[in-house]
Image (cartoon, rainbow, N blue to C red):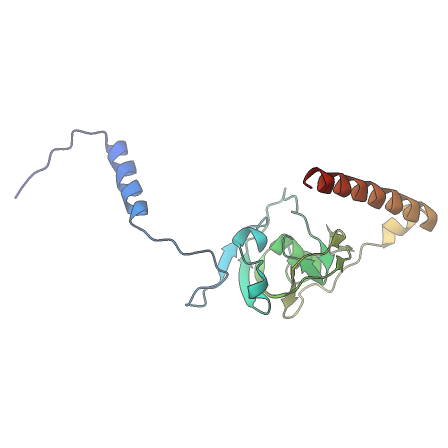
Length: 189
């Protein structure tokens, strides 16, 4: 029997062994489901675009994810659209907006669709989604809703600006946004 004397620091050896193990492991591209049909757990800031699933070739594909329970101090990641959402919307926050899960998390299944020319935002289930312009890929949820889309109108109707103020405010905001977009486009020409 051969005895090996370790003269190095044990932490250094542990880190070295971990690096060696990682260097000999092959990683697969991130997919929503692997061949075993396992549902992957995702965080509240996960997006199809950050996983590389927002490709035109994936239109028509269905993916299932499990959203972890949200923390009490969660600030929702951006959501764009209503019923049909942009591929860069946060999956879990979008699922709450659509009524598919609560902040307690849960499994969601979505289907990739062709992009829309315009996405209309809304306020549902304590989540605000915003308007968005053309994208190549979008998604919608499949399955039964667990929340029947609570619209938050009761208190807001009393404090909402008049229709004229809304139109003027939205027009000014969109005008400023278009001006900025045009300026950026001109810079890259």
